[in-house]
Amino acid sequence: MTSATICIWYDRDAEAAARFYAATFPDTTVGAVQYAPGDFPDGKAGDALTVEFTVMGIACIGLNGGDAFKQSEAFSFQIETGDQAETDRYWNAIVGNGGQESQCGWCKDRWGVSWQITPRVLTEAMAKGGETARRAFEAMMTMQKIDVAKIEAAVRGA
Image 1 (tube, helix red, strand yellow):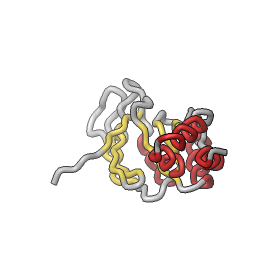
Image 2 (tube, helix red, strand yellow; image 1 turned 45 degrees about the horizontal axis):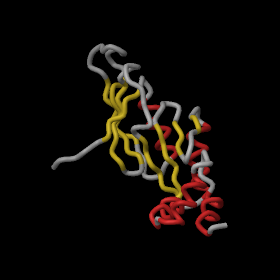
Image 3 (cartoon, one colour; image 1 turned 90 degrees about the vertical axis):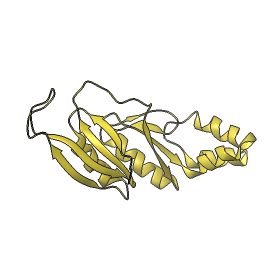
Image 4 (tube, helix red, strand yellow; image 1 turned 135 degrees about the horizontal axis):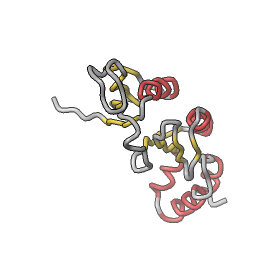
């Protein structure tokens, strides 16, 4: 059977990242840690080389590859939330653990991985198209963390 796994490059903290994700998101687990059988450019034999984990059921592997490559917004996890409390919980966990705020529901964790914390009300408004989508989009463009009440007001045209 064929399968796919997302591989995420970390400097050297893949296991710490995976454990943080497991403590933050439901249906997120840490699996096997593979150790380097020999020295490599940014590590030594016995260092953690790869870490298997899931993020909300999505299979991932973290690779401790050193500082040759950096994360970018070209890859992000999009996490759909049901309400403001859930939005706040995930946003605050990521940003409050050494991460960075960005715009329109995007933030980065302390390892540089990008996250979109997206309330369902926003995606539903965008799917409606037309004036509803335009108003929700314009409201979102003024935000860092998404404010559910403001999106709901924009959907109503208030």
